[in-house]
Image: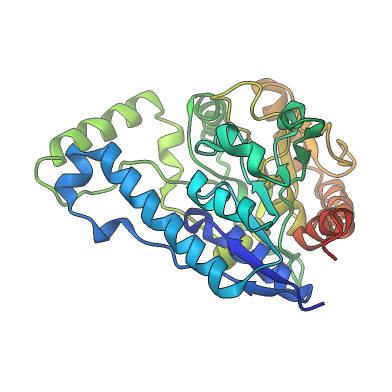
Length: 355
């Protein structure tokens, strides 16, 4: 093949960017990745008081590096993750030099910085959010649905009968809808002596600055008072990679609750959906996110429609281990054939005649 791709990833979601980059290499592409400048090169005061100017300068610097990378590697096409702070400077360069540019939004395109304004530059746009497919980015061309599958090198079934440490687990950032559901489930878990663990990243950790310490203490107290049951189960740190996979293996029921901050923008399955199934973990997921997939409840995973239903199903499936394992196994078999990142991206590259 020997085609060259300029791959512009997103350092902020490094694990997914690296997995997708690896797929291009596995498919035989020569992959070239540009240098990414870092914010620490700038003065802190200028960042704070002249933020707009600082960002414009930073993005200009970044896009000049993208152009240099394109000049060096002479790509057959460019593949961009999440718009990656791209500006018309780079996109105009690609247009003038007849370099096709493909965009994959690992979030709604409406979340990607200025992507909507600049989407007419792209040859094709893919998004993991089904509602984005209503967007016409050029005459007669619409955004295509491409779910964010999973990487089997990271998320895989346990190689032995699970040695469970937890009845329930949840991983993800906390926002209003998730907090309301998790507080009630935590109350149930506490009163029924269930082992529950919640990994998240909320700004409740110690900060060394003496000026921020009082504010931090107040924030911690407010959270503990408002979410007194959930607060008992929180591990306040991020968890990724092998450690995350091990947690899924060690949990009888893995909760998957989609964020509710922007209704209409979270209609499809989040990445956690496929990660859990890739690990052959039993997944209890909030209803309404599977329509664009081949996944069905209760064949591959189990949906709940409200808090009472969630608690009823937690009670039922904790007491029906064999049924729980059968559902998890069926879910894993389906995603292993249809929803690995490799298969999903390979299929779209073939449709675009890049393979």
